Length: 202
Image (cartoon, rainbow, N blue to C red; front, top):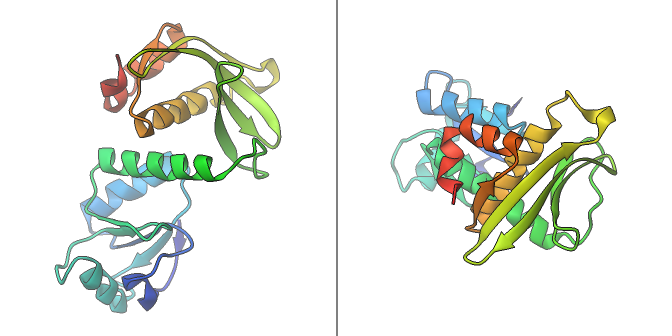
C-alpha cells in the first residue's frame, strides 16, 4: 500500500495503479486492504480523513452518493463497497486482460506470472525467467479442467509456490468461466482450504 494524495482527475480518468479512496475507520475499506495485502496487490490509498478533497472523486464516481471504499482500476472501472468475491472476479478479469494483451512468457523481474501452456497441457508459475511450479491439466467438454498433478521444482519447494500457482489457476478458470476437477491431492486440499473458491468445483 502506498499512501497518496487525491488526484482530481480520478473522478473520470483511470489511474496508473489501482487506487482506493477510503478511511481506516471503514470496515469495508479494511476488508479490501486485507484482500489486496493477502494477494500481494500493489495499490495506492487515499485517506479521506487526511485528504478530505478526495471526497469529490468519491461523489463523482458514485453519482453523488458518499460510500467508501471506492476502488478505481487502471481500466477506468471502479467498485464501491465491493465484496471479496467481487474483488476476486475483478482481479481475475484484469489478469485475463493482461494475459490476452501479452504474447510473451517472460516475467517482469521480481514478479510472479501464471501461464496457461496449452501446448504442454500445463499451467506454469514463472518468476524471474524460471518455471517454479507446474500443474498438469486436460480439458473435458463443457469447460471442465482436470488437474491430476501439481509439482514444484525441488530447489523452490517450501516457499508457497504451489499454492501461489493454484491461486493463479483458479483465477484463470474463474475469468474464463471454467470448472476444475482436482484429482491431485494438493490441488484438492487447496480447494478445501479456500471455501470461497469451491464454486469452481465441477
